Image (cartoon, rainbow, N blue to C red; front, side):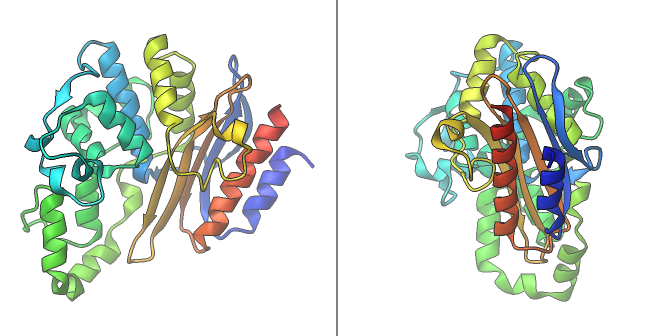
Length: 306
């Protein structure tokens, strides 16, 4: 059975829509599998990989110093529980490089929002357009996405994650109101912060093969992406030697409305350099089943390319 047929068989038993593109090769990339590669999907936290690449490109252009000290005491995120900002001692500075590393390793949305604000959504989207990514856009911060998906009215003044946490804890009855539930139910994730498997594969491959940034910053980005601590998708079925060379960024949404996203995008560093993009929508199956499929497909491609 061909690898395309094996992947197709794995996916056929899962009730979900997939956007997938898998390629390999350090020179001319060869497509191993693709489905719905031009369809737009919500990226969820996969946007953190795009933010990482943009900051490194800005550093390469001399616009940002990775050693710049960020005064965390001046950030509204600092007291947010369960985040890098919250774990750091109040007032202790962090470098841009530290923030990037922890944004990926801890999948930290507050750090991502810090960079979205600093870079601006317009600048990010101009970069995507300049790179020919015609179906990629970031139009909401992760905080804005959370507010809209929970049905919070635009008239309610929430400027920071700390405000969001406080409002959610102190106004739980608000979220039971019919108009709030209706706004949450009508919110369409796929219309915001979207991309395609084709766009993301192109961006990842160009970056990790050194076509976008200097060799030093390319190597740094690869190193940071290998620091992703989530192991339950792409690396799930890989042996330790391949897992150690896997760089990736996950994206997950499990909303009260039942909307679910289970994404993973990345690469396995090595001679054949396979690149993987897994995007999902309309999931009606258990997320563990999808995690397992992503892991098995990744293992299948890795074994066939050895």
